[in-house]
Image 1 (cartoon, rainbow, N blue to C red):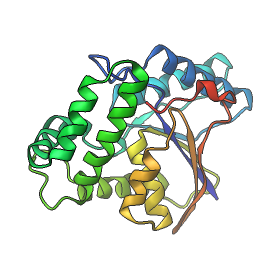
Image 2 (cartoon, rainbow, N blue to C red):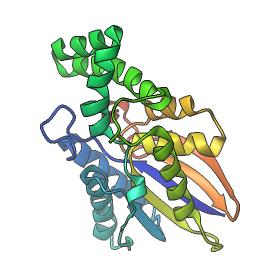
Image 3 (cartoon, rainbow, N blue to C red):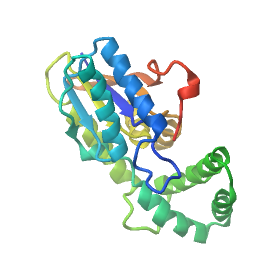
Image 4 (tube, one colour):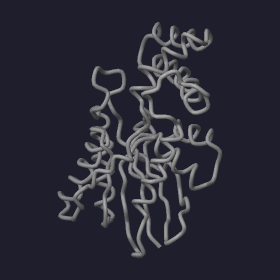
Length: 240
């Protein structure tokens, strides 16, 4: 039996000009995960990481915790399939297209643009984003041909899971640094749940949360989801 740990990246710089960088809070979250794992003497036979800066920075900070403790940390393998869904395309192309067709969604966009303060902006963004992602997942025509479709995204999640769990070696411990959308889709796929469940799960994944999958040849199961043993104080939990 082997273990695959899916790690969502630590907090990125939401609402900043450059989102794809860890925030100061994100640096602390990632550092604490590395300290936690190293303190338990954990080891990993393989580490995979997505192509985004926020994913790679999280893996690097966790690895620093191992190196400070004198423990080995495998050289991360960049796996493009661990990337998040096409966030830039969905927001930049699909959102304007949907707003031009759907007055209710257009009002959600306007409400978000007029919101003030981080809490209110995050709340109105989530309201808008849930409608947008549901349209991306289920809409017969997204109106944005360059945006990666849901089926293509779902397919590469499946390929990534196969790549990371392939082989007959037992006792492997694999860590994969990715994003919430990937984790939601992966868990839904393993559970055989409906597509909608993948989105519902992804919206609940906290920054630098852990999801453990148990695997052996021909079998992949969920052991736990969205756990935070390295951040016991919920004041340190973030979703964006």
